[in-house]
Length: 380
Image 1: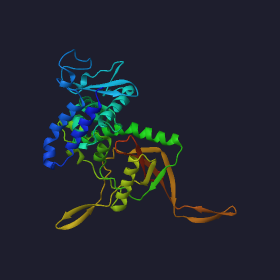
Image 2: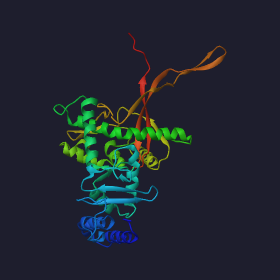
Image 3: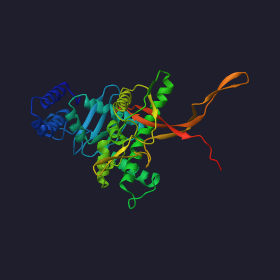
Image 4: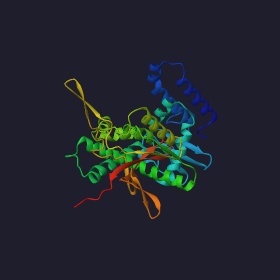
């Protein structure tokens, strides 16, 4: 078998050397060379003396690159990946590619990567191995070729720019590119979000309801990219299109939903519960304006409204079917032999849901914010 006991011991020893007493600068300087040595120890590369000098090459060898074969003990199948040409990966009755776009083989690709990852727990070395294998991992652990993921990402980005926003490259502003990017990332969230809610409903278990007057979420784009594991693919896809991820992130306005410690604590709790896969829903108010924006005029502070919603919020989903009448104030009225309460003011509470993804675990909870609308009819 490819992963013999001796090779596992050599790989573990090489990983320990990588984690040894070297200085940080030396560790960074030797990372690439050591990573390649670990690849050669784990995966038989072309011309390895352990393959023997005579005899025909095994059927799973390629003329170029490194062929990775991981034995699946449970299924009795080999998983193969050509690091030099990931786009030529194929699947046969006895082989399963580490990267596949079909739903039937994506789980097998995830199992293959888990086996690769089990041979070392060094995060820097794992990142280097992943670059060597030229694969990307989504939040569920499914592996796919980076080149394929980038093309799909660019296609979805252009679709939202043209179809959702109705813009083209000649008239689009930087904020339009940000909005198209947010809609693209939101697509990756939708299936996970819906599966998580369906799982919570079917389980019939208890659910945490977290109520807070503030949720200081900050900017959603960067946090979502990290949690979904899409930061590298997104950056490379935008770079090929002549755009900068950092510049587009600056276009997003901070959500004006909190002021300080209370709101930040609530947002951290929501992130943590999603990462721990705990069924939870956050409830709060959808403030149309934040505290205020500061402007310095002639050396004095000038407060201006923080209209953070004036260009819309691409991360929220309006629930038009979830609206309720909420009454305030009023007086007691005695009618028909009993006392009743007659409210003097009323508003309509409209629900808006925002997904809160966990850190690469396939879970996504909801934050439901209520917006106040007038219930007074238009007087002609």
